[in-house]
Amino acid sequence: MLTDWIMIIITTIYVVATIVICISNKRSADAAKEQTSEMIKQYNENNRPYIIVKFEIIRSGLLCFVVENVGSMPAIGLEIDLCREFINNIPDERMVGRVTEFVESKDIYLAPNQRMYITLGGQGDFNEISNVVAKFVVRYSGRYENVYFIDLKQYRYMLTYESAEADIAFYVKKMHESEERYNKEIIKCLKDLKIRSDYSN
Image (cartoon, rainbow, N blue to C red):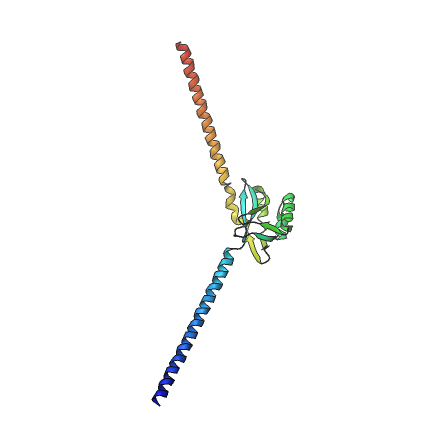
């Protein structure tokens, strides 16, 4: 009788231990599955195209939207929709034609770190162009879609600064002018020395 009770207790302990082990294994498997899923998601996020649209002023006053692939993979089948209200608000008809042609292009390929510029006009057109907020819908690679709203009025402060290249050109010009003055002074001094030398002989 005692032996039966001992067997029942041992069997119960084995059953409870087995259930605990199964529950622990299931939790470990679920955690591993979740971790693997998160790693796959992270890998996919790090190895994909990613298109951004931003506003820049280039070449000392040319207003542009810049479409750039900041991802690590090429964007294929890129389509860019820009709201018609913004396009119609651009004062320069030539620019309207170019922007329209650009946004009507289909199946654009954009490599990683590659960028395209959509020119809008010069700084003189800024006040008129900035009256309408630009809405972009960007679709690419058959599965990604980004929406961007760009209010140009927030970039008004940029109009006072041309570019780093303009700064460099300004300083190079100043250095060149300073060098020319210095050279003229040296030549004048050398001529004066020559004249004195001629008189002394």
